[in-house]
Structure formats: C-alpha cells, structure tokens
Image (cartoon, rainbow, N blue to C red):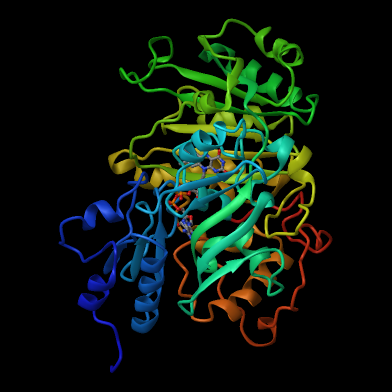
Length: 488
Ligand SMILES: Cc1cc2nc3c(=O)[nH]c(=O)nc-3n(C[C@H](O)[C@H](O)[C@H](O)COP(=O)(O)OP(=O)(O)OC[C@H]3O[C@@H](n4cnc5c(N)ncnc54)[C@H](O)[C@@H]3O)c2cc1C
C-alpha cells in the first residue's frame, strides 16, 4: 500500500515511544490497575503529547486497526486483541483558572493532581472515591463524585473536550458545537475519539464534613438496614455509600479491621459540622465502630474516606442502577455474599438522587437519573475461581432485578465484556442517538475497545443536527423501567 506509514516511521515521529510485543517497555505500557486481563495490542504507543495521539490514530486508521486507550487501567473492560493501544499515562498535567473556577487536565492526569492544584485556590473538583483514578476515563463515563448529590455528575460540568477523532484530526468541542459530539462525549466518550484534555468546573469546597465508619461483622445486617432507611431521610448535601467488605488478614490493613468482614459507611457532607454531626448520630447509635474518621477535613484528604487500595489487582465488577432500595434487598444480598460467603465479594450501595436526578444545564448522554441507588459488586478471582467470581458479580446484581433501571457506565471497572451489553447502560433513545452519531463520527468503529455503541446502519444513521436527547425522554418506552430485569 503506497503512503501507508510503517511502524518505524511512526516510532520516529513520536515524542513518546511505539512498542511491539517483546519490546522492552511493552508490558509496562499495557499494564494498569486491572490485572484480571490485559490489552494485547500489536502496537502500544506511550503518548508524549496530543500530537502523538493524532499520529497513533492516523496510523491505526491507515492499517485498519482498532484503537484502545488506557490512562490508569482502573476501568479496563474491553481489552484489545491486536490493534493500537494509546497509553496516555505520560500526558499528565493540570491548569487551574481560579477566576473562572475551572481546570483543564491532560489525558493522563489522575484526580489527585487536580485536587492538589485546585486546593491552592480553595477549590475542589467532582472527584470520586479514589484520587488515583484518571480524570478523563472517569468523566467521559459520567463520574459519580464524593459530593455528587450536591453537584451532579462530573460529566454535567465539562466545558470543553479536546480530542482526536477517527479522521485523525484535532477537535476542541464545546457547547457551541451543534453536531452532537458535545452531548455524546459526556456519557459515552470513549466511543468518539481519544480525548487529549478536558476543561471542567471546580467548586468552592476547601473543607467539608466527611469520613468513614467501620462496623464489625455482627452489626452488618442492622447497619445495612439502617443505612437503607437513613438515605430516605438525608438532605441533598449529604452524599454517601455503604460497603460490605471482607478485609484480608494482611499487614496493609489497619489492625482493628484485619481479617474481618465489615460494614463501611462513607459520607461526604457539604454542610456545617454541627448539622453533619446530627445527621450521622443515627449511624453512630448503631454501636461501636472498629475505626471511625468522620469529621471536618480538607478536600485534599478526601481519599481517606474510602481508603481504597492502589496496587494492581485482579477484579471483576457488575452494577445495577436501582429505582428503589427495597426492604428485601439487604437480606437477599447478604444471603449471597454476606459474611462466610465462599467467593470474595465487596458489595457497595451508593446513594443517588438530589442533583444527580436533575437534567444537566447542557444535555448529555448520562442516563438513569431517576435511580435512587446503584449497587456495585466487585469480586476478586483467585486461581481457578475466575469464572465463579465473574458469575457471582453478575448474580448479586440479579437480587435487585425487579427495581433495576439499567447499568451505570460510571462504574466500568473490570466489567468484562461490557461492550457486548452497551444497550443496558443507556435508555433506547440515548443508545439510538449515540449509534447514529457513531455512524457519522466513527463509521468504521475504530474506537470499539470500550462500552461500545456500534455505528447505526441505514436510516437510523442520521442524527438530527443539534438535537439534544434529554435523558429520560423516552421513559414510557424503555424496556429497562422498574419491573424489568436486566439481562446479564
Ligand atoms: C478503585 C476504584 C474506584 C472508583 N471510584 C469511582 C467513583 O467514585 N466514581 C466513579 O464514577 N467511578 C469510579 N470508578 C470507576 C472509574 O471512574 C472508571 O473505571 C473509569 O473509566 C476509570 O478511568 P481511568 O482513566 O482511570 O481508567 P482506564 O482503564 O485507563 O480507562 C478506562 C476507559 O476510559 C476511557 N478513556 C480513558 N482515557 C480516555 C481518553 N483519553 N479518551 C477517550 N476515552 C478514554 C476508555 O474507554 C478506557 O477504556 C472507580 C474505579 C476503581 C477501580
């Protein structure tokens, strides 16, 4: 083929490096946090900057390759076999503009870098439980933050998306663009290009009231039931989750928690310390805490609320957005993966609603805003347990099937084969519009190593220009309304 760029030419043009299987550095480039499976690209590009991303996309297009993107590997769900992997980890950098209360972060930036830079101005981003997660992967899939019930999804507060599209061109997409990309990139972002940088809002939260309460095994049923009822009473400024966690007996776990199956209630409250104390009182009344760190804290300490591990690991995950946290759910879930269960499973319920239920100022592709909670199950496969662990994660979400609205792209983390089930993450109207936009912006489905929405064919492939499909617009016709089970 004349005019086709060779691997050597690509490698020579990059600021970063291009690697093939067997090259020194190849394993590093394809390895992230998720280790249950890895990308297996024929070419891995460690991108030194936006121009490297453009060169890699063009190379992939010329050779008919798929393009996968990885920043940290927290959300790997559709590993590429062959194709080009763009490793954005070297592209880390943040700019904060205190006057407009915005930040711009490059593709490889982790939340901890934004949190630190924003804190210098008394500001905070809508980051989530782990400061180690990548800003872009988190935000383009929705982004459920620690203070999400107060401020909404991270995707609701994006101002500009800089990316390379399937034609190998740079674009800077803002609300003024009327070709649907700004809508689609905020909720289904990985499908439409490789983001090189994002501009988004910051919030005046220097300090807040929050932390975690760990309860011992025998209190788990009472804590879970009280938490379920409590979330029906708290104000919008209170965001929270509960995790049921079998903690290993290893030195990295604090001594009082070591080897115990615990209930961990995590809160983040954007209100006064006094009212926060009143809100937490019913939880404290449940009994002694093995460990508690609830109090006023700087946003820079927000990672201590969940205190999630940083090391690479094998994990599978499944989730279900629930219209209601029914009274039967705690018992059903504990029967499956409560203390003593054979498969190691972490179960988590996040409280949704409040600002998350509001339509964003500029419509985007984040769906299921009517969910009251999301159930997440993370299993850690060990040796021959791999398939059992994967199936268990799916089985637990079936416990909430009667109230399941669908699934959340926000928690794509080890959700193996999620791409094959992309319809479950969006309402039919959103999915159809995404597919129509995909037919225009990525007709060859080059960006398919993700929660993939394939390009629509025929008549379905013509999105109305500038049309914003409001989330929930098709509520009457959705097959994923309450009462319908999600197909696993
Ligand atoms: C410990 C842990 C805690 C988490 N906590 C939260 C939480 O509190 N709230 C929440 O909403 N989510 C949370 N998540 C989920 C997390 O936000 C998603 O898994 C997210 O996709 C991770 O992004 P990443 O860049 O870190 O991961 P990666 O695995 O590097 O990327 C994940 C996917 O994001 C897309 N992507 C990444 N970079 C780009 C880019 N430059 N251009 C286009 N697409 C891109 C790709 O589809 C890629 O496959 C958590 C996950 C873990 C493992």
